[in-house]
Image (cartoon, rainbow, N blue to C red; front, top):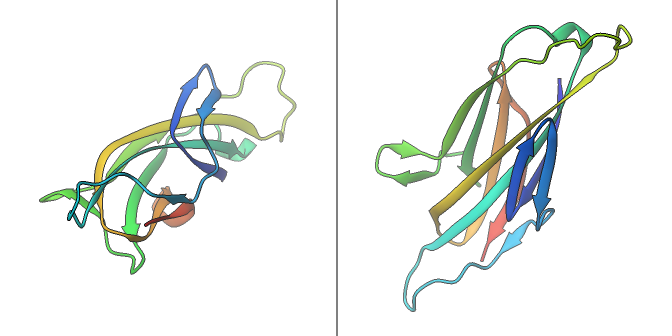
Length: 140
């Protein structure tokens, strides 16, 4: 399974299609209160999966997690790392050519993540395979 991940201001998945606004950025300068060391980041991930024929009609575990530049989990509130788990299952519709890859879409919204200036990465793990994809960004 392959995945394309875009960082965006907003994203939504409807009927297998991604609707995206403000996508493709990798640097953000969120406003912060004077003297504050942390910024509050709002963003979305738009993920397009290419599911191989042999991977259809079965459940796949998908995890998205936010890590810092050292690979440590980012914690939004004490004890709560920024992480989303989901299941993905793509069926084979009638008339699809055997062997063809099928599309699946997933959109995730992240609001109010406190981040210090630095480099971060949203990691996409599929079926316990770490870093199946992802996207990096900088906060300054």
